[in-house]
Length: 465
Image 1 (tube, one colour):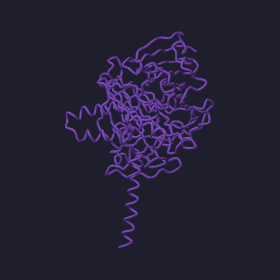
Image 2 (cartoon, helix red, strand yellow):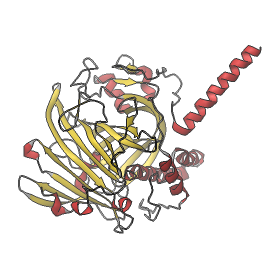
Image 3 (cartoon, helix red, strand yellow):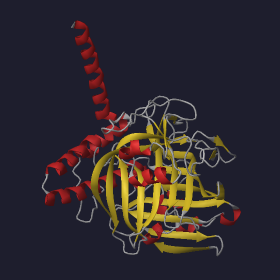
Image 4 (cartoon, one colour):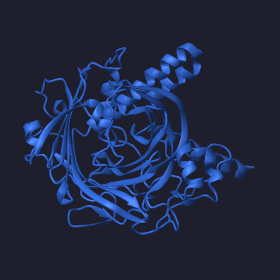
C-alpha cells in the first residue's frame, strides 16, 4: 500500500512538472490520442523517428495536410522527435518587454493598424502564449456572430506579433544561398545579402513613421552582381515603396508594394516570402481558423551559441551546422547534397528535426488588388510567434506555393540573450512544378547602429554599386 502510494506520488510530481513545463514553454507538447509516440532526440544521422510513406498514416493528425501529401505521395520524409534538446523560451529582457507591451493599451483600427506610441522594447507586441490563449478561450465561448469578429481580431494580433518578433532584433543582416533544384542537383545557385533595419528601434530620436527599411541584393554569379531591391515600409496606411536596381541597364526603377509578391530572378521566391512571411499587416487581413498540434521543423536539435563579443551586435557565422565554404555559406544540409533519405526528395533538410508544437492556423487575405497573392494559409508557432508553413493561392484560387520555414534559438554563453534565427527555407512551386531551397550564414543582429551601417545607406541612390 505504502509502495503504491509512493509510486503514485512520484507519478503525480512528474505529471505536475510536465504540465508546468508545457504551460511555460510547450515542451514537450502532448500528442493527440491515437498518434504513435515520438522518441526523445538522440544523436547521429537520424535524431528521432523517420516518418515516410510507409508510416505516415500513423502521424497524419500531427502533419499539416500539405506536408502529409508530400510524405504520403511525393517521396518526402521527415526526422521527428518528441522535442528539441533545449527549452524554447526567450530571455528575461524579452519577457519583461512583453509584459510592458501587454500592459500598454493598444487598440487595433478597423483597417488593422495600430498606434506606434508603445514602448520601443524587445518582446511580443500583443502578449505571450498565455495572453493569446485567453483570446482563444473567448472565441470558444462566444456565439457564432461574435466569434467571427474575435477570430479576425486575434488574427490581426498574431500578424502583428510576427512582425514584433522580427523587429525585436532591431537590425537583421545575413547572407543567403538560393538554389534551383532539378535532377538531383542544384541547377542554379545564387548568393546574396539581406539587410533590414528598424530605425525607430535603433534610434530613439527617429521620428519618421517608417516601420523598416530593407535592402537585399545578389553578388553571385557575376552576371547578377549588383542586382538589388530597397523597400520602405511605413507605420501608417501608406503603401510600401520599392526600388530596384538592374546592373544590365544600370538604372534604378521605382516599383509598388504590389511587386513584393513578384518572383525574383526567375525563381518562385518573392520578397514577401523572406522569413516565411514578410507581408504588411496593414494590408493583409488575418483570421484564426483553428489551433492545432502539428510537427514543426527546427534547423537541428541543439541550441546554437550566439557570439556577443562585438556588441551592440550578436553574430551567428554558421547556424545550420554544416561545413562552410569560403564565404561562410553552409553546405551539405540538403538531401541532394548528402542523401540521408534514400530515394527521398532533393529538398529535404538532412539536419532538421520536426517537433510537435502548438500552432495557430490563419486564413490571410491580401487587400491589395494588384498583388499576385490571393488567399494564404499561415501556420504560426504559438510561442515563438513565427510562421512555419505558408500555403499560397494565386488570384484565380489555384494552389501555387507551399513554403516551409525553420527557425531555431541561439543564446549567448552567459545566457543573457536569446535570439531567433532562420535555419532554412523551402519553396515548393506546386503550380509550376519547381523546387527551391534557401539557407543562411553570417547572421547578425544589432541593438543599435554598428560602425559599418548608417541609415543613409538605405537611400534609393545608394543601391547603385
